[in-house]
Length: 298
Image (tube, rainbow, N blue to C red):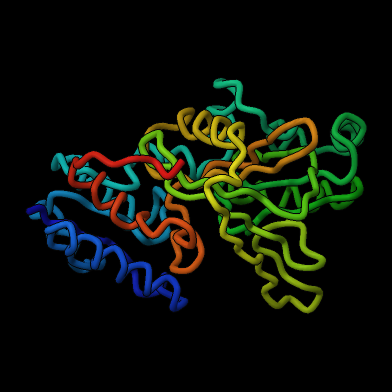
């Protein structure tokens, strides 16, 4: 019997599907014969008493979750997400550079410093990548600090605003689609596959309408036989470019193939969404944390 800790923060349990998923992890551990406790920031010093740590809180090298991951790794625990993946995925420049080196298909992408955000550079990139362009701050999450720009003035204004948060700016080709594939992978195996279907009028997974209200995507379950083999291959290749931890790979599909939009650490695993066609998601995560063998979903 192993002891598993799930590190979370009260402010991250915003929706019932998140709380239900946490409960499902605990139930799965119990059915496999293991103990599972929820621990919070004030209990971080108890981590060495456990055999594995699952982080279900916002990850960032400046957050307590990263301290928890480092502590678990230093004590020899299996941990999701492990510190290296947090560092890479929380910096989009770092993440895209990993994908580029591995030859993973991504949108046309470049990185700019503050002195490169100029009208001349804007004109060149609009000509090279087309209009609009997508600007991203490297340390953005949930589509925050991700914007489309259609002209030079907005390119300069938004680019310089984002560069107050970082020393480099991500500029990408805009690739519209009605949905994104989300392939959740762990240790080089597929845990689940869903579609994130954009809301009406939205162009990204987490968007807002004209009045500023949340305009969230719809999550559609996908049966195993509906998953294109090439999608699986591209997703595993993208995850492998980062490491062998727990990742959510966002991918767009076009007539000529698949394009990876990004690789996320600490991906959503929400009850009724990512587990909709594979309830073994919870058990497989626990099996990984205790070093037991498990099979990928597809």
